[in-house]
Length: 63
Image 1 (tube, rainbow, N blue to C red):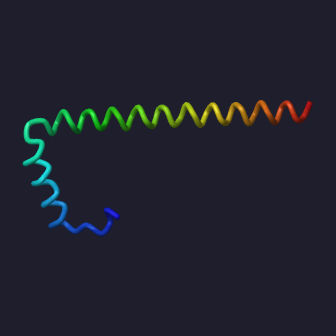
Image 2 (image 1 turned 90 degrees about the horizontal axis):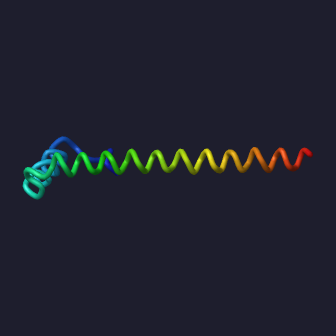
Image 3 (image 1 turned 30 degrees about the vertical axis):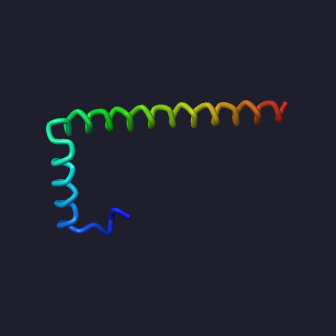
């Protein structure tokens, strides 16, 4: 979806973001970065829990 955007469209989006958020843009970007980091950490936790559960169920089946 974003691959279809050309350089002109990206500049327009950037200008609109600057007009809307102004001086708040750095704090908004920082909060978005933290949110993405927390989401990835949560995703890794869920993946490790699922992997552990799969390993436990395989061990229960073998015994």
